[in-house]
Length: 140
Image (cartoon, rainbow, N blue to C red; front, side, top):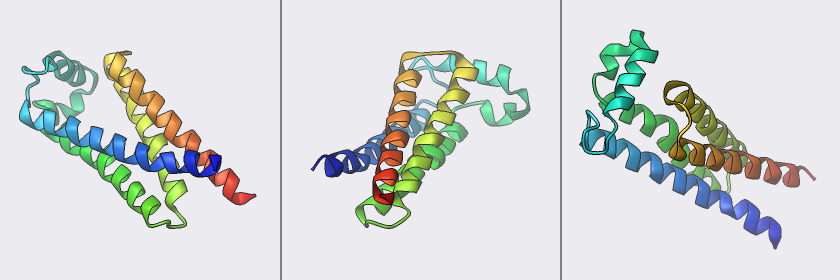
């Protein structure tokens, strides 16, 4: 019973994080310069930290596409694999959790620690650790 709840929670995490990535991307596209959501200073910090990417950091539109691709589509694909009970589902989900944590490390480097990034790092850690636990259980 406990195994089903623990491993079944991965469906929640992949969908929750994937939906969060979609919402974040839509916010970036809706408010590309960050005025409405108070993110304009974040855009300036990104340009300062990564001047080589300045042409792509004039607004949040490219960042929204990257967020959607890296943390949205991958999470939804892992969810699909979980729902279809594919052999690679648990490993894909663990990789998604690791990708999310790496994404957050990049955010910490660019902007420092903040509430939302810290929470999403924990989500990625929970997702990756849960997938690892389920992989280990399957191997027994």
